[in-house]
Length: 450
Image 1 (cartoon, rainbow, N blue to C red):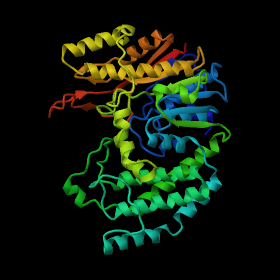
Image 2: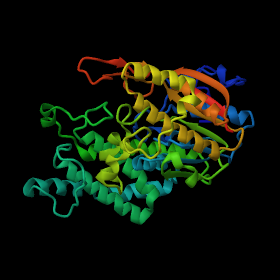
Image 3: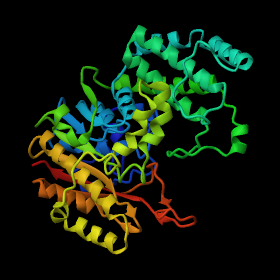
Image 4: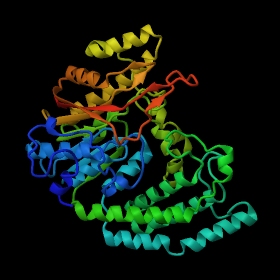
């Protein structure tokens, strides 16, 4: 698919039209394919719609603000949407994330694999796998364990048997692939195993937080590991081949396993030509639990342990594992934040949680200001959540905090969220039967770096 024909599917503007202004674009992107190329390799909570990144990069390239070979930076890599789109636009990418599974996911999606090498690695992985999985099932049935397997550190009661042993055996086969073909190919196969892990587990479909099937449903849950794995492998293979044939393999994509609140240490100063990112909407514990979603897939497929994955949500913005000192002046920097916190205090709401989140968010803004070249665009894709039934106008707070740091505001582009995987309502006070609206709209807040 050519760049022009691809753009023709991404909004209300036809391929023959010139985009004279960002306001000309229909940012809702209702009904578009958000899983083309490697965007479809694996699910992830609250994925940023790739068409947002595509349109922004197309616009700024057409305006001459960004050129091929420039660097795109994303302080919240997540599933790697920005890095994939950067490569599709002939741009280098750098990003970071505190979730080791997100780092692996971003690398596997954004770094292309040669078709011949991928085909050889796939064939090596599948050779004899069916017979070996049958042996695993038979030994488990007769012995109650499989002596040659080291079992992953997943929590008891979250997987049926012997399927967990079959997953562990596929993991070992992928480790062999890494030794023979390299880490890039192993990462690709680990995403297939991760998908299979979630399908095989007792995790409830459609939930990103850890919720198990009922005991009754667990009794009937007897998934076919091999079938699930091979079907997903075929689909992912085709997606990667399409992506690999489209992009420039000489470009660089670097995903740091590090905290965006200290990102300058890894990325450096005055490096990024453009920043496009979708920050978390709140602390991971009460909004989107990225760590919970990633825990079992990471333990089955990665080189991380339970304690490391358990801390992912605690280490997120506004999390329990605080890494920054309180910033008492923060309310002075943003009148909207002050008014919001005052309202929360009047209601005995979660004002401290809100303050902790925006303190951490502000620290990322400071880092991004140092990383980005002066005057270059920085786009924050944010949604306005509620806390204690109080709306949090994150787009206004983002603008005001950035302006305090010397950013220059250029655009606020509102959009509805028809495609994003998010809860539409929750129980904000944890009272049974009480629910409140969450996020159905986003704003793309664009500023120029100081």
